[in-house]
Amino acid sequence: MSGKRALIVVDMQKDYLGNGRKNMFSYDTPKLTAEVNRCIREFRENGDDIIYIRQVFQNIITNRLFIGFTIKGTEGADIYEGVEVVSDNIFEKYFPDSFSSAEFREFAEAQDYSEIAVCGLDECGCVGATAAGAVKRGYDVTLISSATGTRFSGKKLEKKRIKLKKLGVRYK
Image (tube, rainbow, N blue to C red; front, side, top):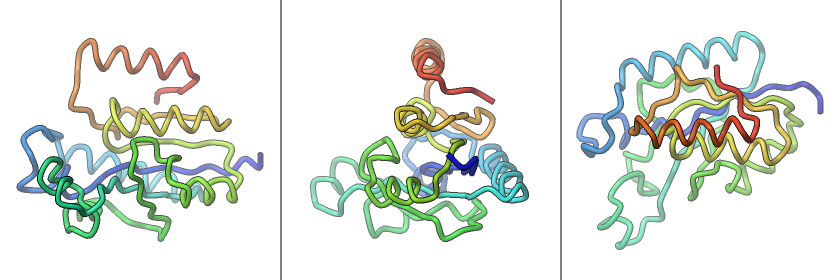
């Protein structure tokens, strides 16, 4: 691998961070956004690629009724306005692991990254799944905990961290 690095910013979307979000998304939006933006600036200054991933659910009646957030084509699926968008590398995914998106996976493979850093939402969800997916594809992976939110604490969070560390994910 060439030694190229990328920062993957996962699911920093309006329905998770904005006003009117569901109560279950209790993230500290100002703090998390500031940390994610700090990472974006740091990686960009180093000449690394910045990639944005958006979770979307198909815009069908059952998803609108039962899920009710990040529905494809709605404003809530857009990147939260407080996040600095510094590249056109924006991809959508339907499943937690960002590498489940063929478009993103093919892009990453074509770039020949050796190192991937991951941040965003949620450590026990899509950030963790993306970190694990990156390790399984042979990338050197760092999860930036200061720029990653989670709705969980205690045993669930600790169990996830142990699992990711066993896979080879480093925490920063």
